[in-house]
Length: 103
Image 1 (cartoon, rainbow, N blue to C red):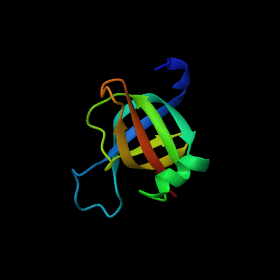
Image 2: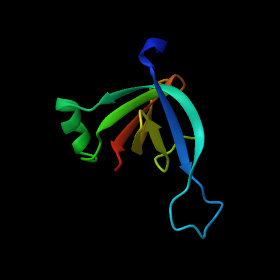
Image 3: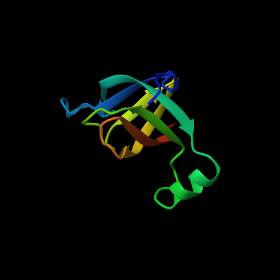
Image 4: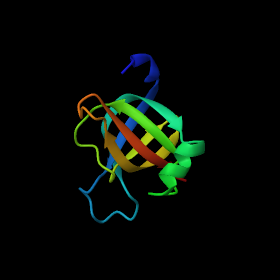
């Protein structure tokens, strides 16, 4: 993986479950990493729509264990819900996060 592609600062957040009385969701930072953000377009979008039609982008980061679809990513003042986490075939170099933009 070439480091030059990873030019976006991406913060991976997990839901904070320490306080149960809050009415709003509270999120804490799990990791802050460098990543590449690519919008899904054309044929890729149609392939992705078979699984979930709301996938809007792919975030590629260096491999990091523990990231799940229950987390979210924040980059460039946009918040993305993680739909799927896809490791590469070697399972130790990179992760692809299929995400949808949240409002």
